[in-house]
Image (cartoon, rainbow, N blue to C red; front, side, top):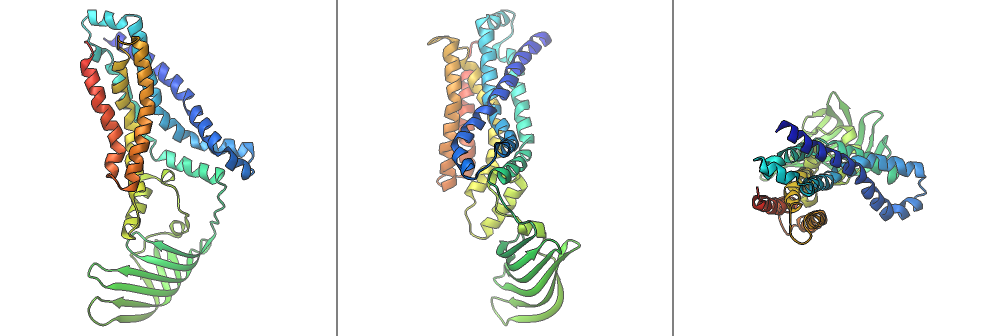
Length: 353
């Protein structure tokens, strides 16, 4: 079986590589057409647009995995069916399931690669957004802003400067589990050795029941505030521009502040669901290419390619339901995969072996 496995795997890989190179330009063309007016209004040079789309390529590349896997799998099955190689293998005692096991294993490997790229893509998207959206982020200072910190502190800051790692005229509030509150006013806060050192202020502890405690201080170290000056100065990013760690962190902050976390949680689940779609759609598409009804294998190819559009449509519909809170985000992200997986397993079980 080693020779036959190499033949099947080699055919699949050749078709997959051709498809993975041909598919991303379609995404690029679609997005360029959609946003060309915005780029022209911003007076972006063609070299700038090209640089931005170069950074967007990893995103388009990972989106292409399920499509390229489907095309490669279907045409591998189609070619071997047309040339009677499937029939010959069956005559030699090799079932369809065993014959195409290398294809399914390669699909699982491609899924693993997609998962491995999950944290590279957001960083590339962030660079592309900075270029194409022409963000002018002043990295030296930030004035009059509020921030919900990881450990429960809410900050109101008059000015933050990166050159000296200093905040001026800040107020911090934190609610305690017991119902009390901590309120701190300080003239200055300095980031030193991984901690904020507050200078010239007053610390108030306001219990739910009992008298308020107020302490005037010249200097105090605030261990509970772990955000660095760089963390505090960052502008809000789109979910597709954040790593999984950043998404989880923002979701926790938004949840504590009473904000909507559906979009963030949906994006987190999609980081796993979209790469997994490669092997799921392979299971669905490959059996259809062996169909002998309604035009034979050509009918199976047409249905298989149409399944990509159906999958994207299902993702759009369920994604909208998930973002609105109509259904749990886990269902929104994984239901398309689940539907295709169940249907694919049924089709695979019905293939004559």
